[in-house]
Image (cartoon, rainbow, N blue to C red):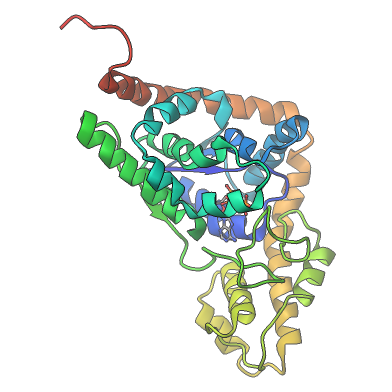
Length: 331
Ligand code: AQP
């Protein structure tokens, strides 16, 4: 079982990233061969400051290790260190259609956000993601719900490539956690908690300290009524129930039962905040020990890249060959 996933570099990874994806990475290294990549090339699509981008790769690596990734048991690396990703991306661009890329929800949403300059990098984002995944003959991709459409596109591209040029790529499936696949913004629970679109109060960051986390939950927007139950007309409470369930590792029904007699939303919000404080505290503490030693983090990313390259390179060589790239070979 080969498990692969990529994550954008930033020191501001949020609770959605943690519950929707990072916990799945950690669990993945128990079940199979986990390969995890910090996607600095994808991050270029947001036009980051170059020095900030470089540093944020260390921030993310330290967060992932603090959350439980063990570089001795999985492969953790920086995307740009393995050039095979960009080469395969270009090969796959010729197999992905303009129409299907135009229909990607993330592209439509982000091009709205960056209306003054929509880069073609943003348009090709899912093709680079497909290259990341397919280069490793991936079986499973742990992601949050927002990435489901991109994984479906990856399968589509792989199938098309295989039928046009011959069997080359494994077809990956996405793995979405049963609870926590779509954590919503605390201030606007109809919107996904997001690094770029959420306000400071709407998102809880993995590195927020306990007082800030408590304050954000205290101020979380709730709904009319008093019942602590999930429902389409209760997006705020439904989100808080899901967060509490995911943080404590119990089904949402158990949370509804536990708080069935609660006097109101106030004490429930406090309890959810407390569960998240306890969940994130050890991660933040380990992060503080790991992050200062940039040389050590760099060395492990670079060892990870060597291991990743050794896996990706033969697949990309086959893809080149199948497409007719390179010299004529004697039969
Ligand atoms: N709100 C969320 N709930 C559950 N999972 C989520 N993920 C993102 N938001 C939520 C999952 O986190 C993983 C890493 O995401 P990413 O950093 O590569 O970027 P993203 O998916 O585009 O989401 P972000 O971090 O909020 O960034 P922006 O603001 O740029 O969209 C992915 O598996 C994702 O599904």
